[in-house]
Length: 63
Image 1 (cartoon, rainbow, N blue to C red):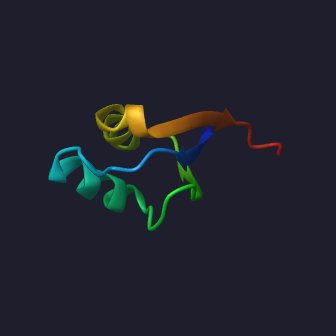
Image 2: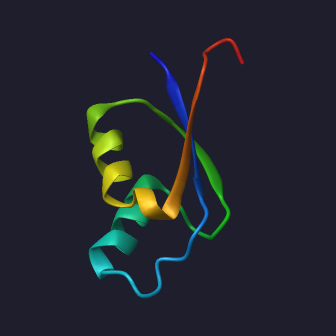
């Protein structure tokens, strides 16, 4: 299964509270943080909700 490298690149200030909560649920704590998560439908759904605040990149298992 592939993995996703997700970077939080834009602040959630000015957006709805549930979007900030989605960022926390993904595991972000501060701006410009990069995390890696397994690719799954639930993670994709959370990314879709806040895609305007994130940068997403698929990575191979070989890396």
